[in-house]
Length: 83
Image (cartoon, rainbow, N blue to C red; front, side, top):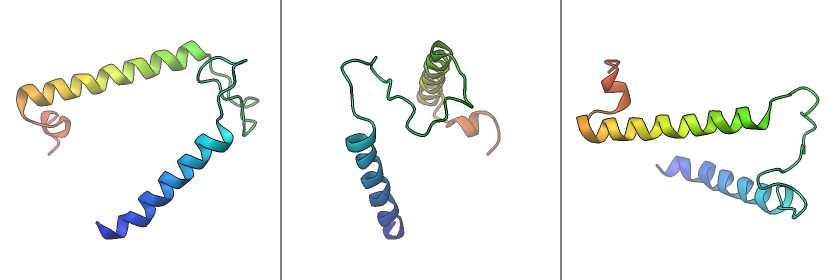
């Protein structure tokens, strides 16, 4: 709707600024390693492989939902009987 356009524009501008200013690639770092710009490393101690495996599992789950929707014609909510 028209009411959502300013919010979407703000999100695009904000994410663009983050990409251009804060999250720059560095040849001395691994791909995807943007450091710890907000100093959360002291309170969050999660192994990198653990996060990568969670992301991979989430991508497979979404692909499974897409495949089930193509086969049954129902979305995930309808398949669970919640709608």
